[in-house]
Length: 318
Image 1: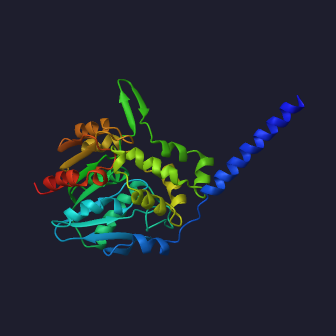
Image 2 (image 1 turned 180 degrees about the vertical axis):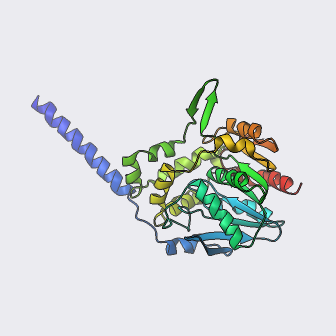
Image 3 (image 1 turned 90 degrees about the horizontal axis):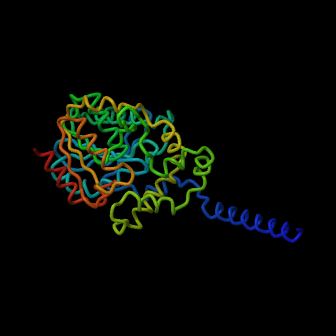
């Protein structure tokens, strides 16, 4: 009995030591924004004060204005390949939304899609742009369609790329929440969320990128590094937790009132927002066109930039 007790104690100590080493190995301090600017501030980058936000944005090209809105955990860099083509015919304006990228947290600590939509309208006012095109991916798609819903007179055309917004699934007489991606469920736990602000494993971001690409062989190490390092920007982890706990108003039932000409692009292998949601958007928005990319995942503009931007250009120039 004594032997068994000692053995049990030994096992517990080994497990505890393993946990301590794991936590110590994955502890990551915040990275000062100045250090990240050296790597991620591009020649076209600029900061602009809008509301209480020092907004990192990138403006390229000439022609009609097109706002590009990234998704959760991402940054304006997600649009790099699209901008290379679109900027030949349009003025592309991409930005790091508050709580993301080089923009980082804000004093108001408002990270809802409702605020993001308002912020982009205010950005357009600052740039003296009255009407414009809008494209958004994932959470950015949610922001984009809210913009078209609230001020249709300003949004000329809308592009939704694997967009968020259908939070409830209705089947017959029952309604249930849509399934959330693993990282969202993980960080919704208070203890895990609190630990995340200091302990942020690299493998978690590797796993996420593997999930959002349909073809995992296209995931580049520099892309994982970018997502990971920009999350470690001072204040972004705390802002992420606040955002996940209050993402904004649920206007799912109002999507059907959108009249703006809309292009819906979707990866058939999207593991975060299933392709079923593409059909729901297409059914709800009467003036819409749907294109599904076989083999692609949640971020077609990154994974298959040539094919997806060709579809976007064709729609915008119609």
